[in-house]
Amino acid sequence: MTEPTTGDSSTGDSGTGAFVQATGRTLEDSSGRHQRRYRAFQFGLIAQHCGRSVLEVGAGLGEFASQFEDLDRLVVTDVDPAAVAAMADRFRDRPEVEARQLDLAGHVEVVGDPVSTVVAVNVLEHIEEDSAALRSLATLVEPGGSIVLWVPGYMQLYGDFDRAVGHVRRYTPSTLRQAILGAGLTCPEVRPVNMLGALAWWAAVRRGGVKAPNPWMHQIYDTMLVPTTRLLERRLRPPFGQSVLAVASVPAAPSSR
Image (tube, rainbow, N blue to C red):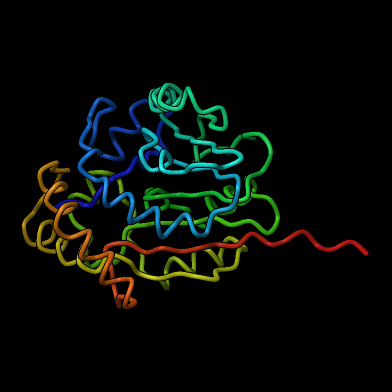
């Protein structure tokens, strides 16, 4: 099996082709449909930490972001202009959604008023200077807001697939916390998730040599392992996982006296 991808292109020269480079998928690739249960699993863990206005960085084709409903504002961004155009078309009937180009590795441009929450799913691992990137993202968040991060876990799982899609690293809870604290943010929560996925990833990538996304493996994983994972991790906190989830808090504005 291969690591599910939601759309994690956030950096690249001028952005053109960044989605393909970062995900191993084309803009026309519909394999994301094989990850419906996995995206719902992600969403259930991430959305509880989100406020009424959300910006997703590296949103790709908007597959994860499409699960948000009843927000005051949803900003979907990507460095790849073709991906941004695809999202603008996807969300054309939702007036609360804005599609914008944003390069996390370069200068983060103003995207309107700050949001209560920034979400970055499978993004930070592509960036060498991760604390600097988090500082840039914090400028997009209102005081007291948060950045919710979902990143690949554990360098023991790093393989040819990671290299092929430009992963600089995989994280542990400790190394992700260090990146967050290094950005001047606090870290009220960080934990591994998806233990069964880690075992499947080790077997497929580290032992089996899988180097590229495989839609059929995604479908088998989505159908068989994800429901079991959801039930299991409702009852226990896994000691390790395929991914690491963290919440980074942006300092509140100092009170005026």
